[in-house]
Length: 210
Ligand SMILES: Cc1cc2nc3c(=O)[nH]c(=O)nc-3n(C[C@H](O)[C@H](O)[C@H](O)COP(=O)(O)O)c2cc1C
Image (tube, rainbow, N blue to C red; front, side):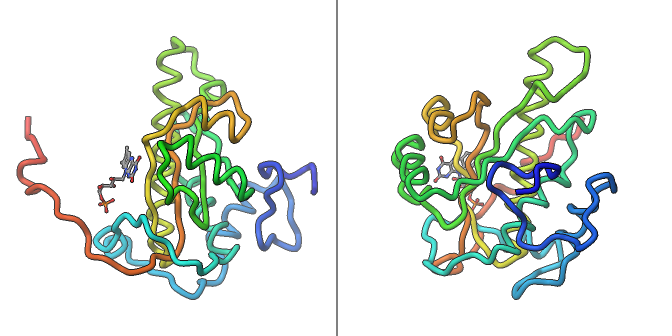
């Protein structure tokens, strides 16, 4: 592994630019985001939003590495407080760790999915001179928003996902071996079947004009 690159331990993107230069702003990020369209890609953002539906049954079809890179890169495009990026992504690949995560997530079996990302808060990255509780608030927003971006990217790539919020924080931290508190677990893969989106309340009831 090239130590000059800031990949999470053990993570190497599928494809990197030939002339990789860590000093070039967003070179790797842009390269991954703009790499040739993978087999399924929907570039109409609103169509992606309209079609997204949580999936708890994934097929055994493996997810292409290039798609995983795009899903991860999408998280890195989300806005963050002060652009301090107060979050980290743990890409859980070890099958045994995935099994342990199921137990840490209230025994939700579908957490053992083809692709599993744990989004953790990292308030220590948020360098504002504010009270710690504000930094924590920013970090949870950073981590949550980033996971939302990944979830939409997954949909655009023909994948499906389930957002997991029901977990024992300490157990998840033990599994992924971190002192950072998780904010969500995003499980993805090809769905066994495509289903219609769930109904929502009337938009007029959602919005309060003040
Ligand atoms: C904060 C949050 C926590 C969630 N936690 C879980 C969870 O622990 N287990 C689960 O199966 N689904 C979980 N979900 C998924 C929701 O059940 C799902 O998004 C919701 O039913 C709406 O369905 P849709 O995503 O298909 O629109 C969670 C979603 C959110 C946003």
